Image 1 (cartoon, helix red, strand yellow):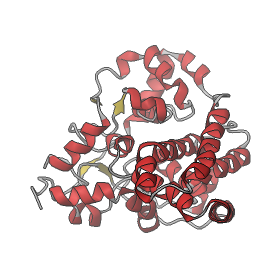
Image 2 (cartoon, one colour):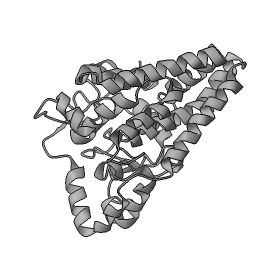
Image 3 (cartoon, one colour):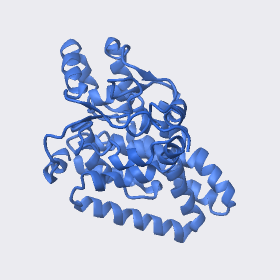
Length: 329
């Protein structure tokens, strides 16, 4: 089983999340940062090209061997699907059409969702807003591992399994930690996705459908681009709860590596987050950062000081309600 993790509890803190205070200070010093707010007009076309590429790949993959399908899914299709998941992350912040057109963002998210194979766009937005609003809250932040996860996957082998199964925990954790009522748009998202999946099987066969689904699952688990799931908030340096990564994988992940910048300014699209760091470098140069998502995954599995318990947590002051989700839209 390997080494047992050295931590037996989360890192409990009793202060406010750092992003709110830092944002206020930065805007007072650099008010020009507000000019970066709002959607990137190129974003919609980039995402659409990625969706169309995956639809094209269905014809290419329909007659390939199973081994070739898995290989291409891991090295190519899964990367695109993971990038589309992060495009949905952008869309959850209304970065496709802006805050004034919420429904347009939701429906574009469903289009972006199609190659992923699982209906996740609308549900992700609902829970992701809670992650920003209640960062590290013991009941309200669905990104923090549950106590059961931390206790079960507390060895080297256990952490390896946890990384491989990360798509499963990422999907079902919110339903146990803080389940919210199903919304009408979630039902529509599911119907649209099932209709697309049915059309894929009918037109291209099960191999093509497998190419999409296995790509999504593989690229969310033991995969270089999946390193950001752990890199973003797991406590690699005591007292620091959010970490940025400025390496080349940002090019295919809508700059999700600029994670401190993103939490400081969620109204700024990923394409403009490097500008935030250029304008105000002194606010980020002294914060611990990651240089490799692959190294993040390796250290998470092998270092006994890191594991599911290596997260900052705050005592909950309120329970999320349906109103939280409605206001977030």
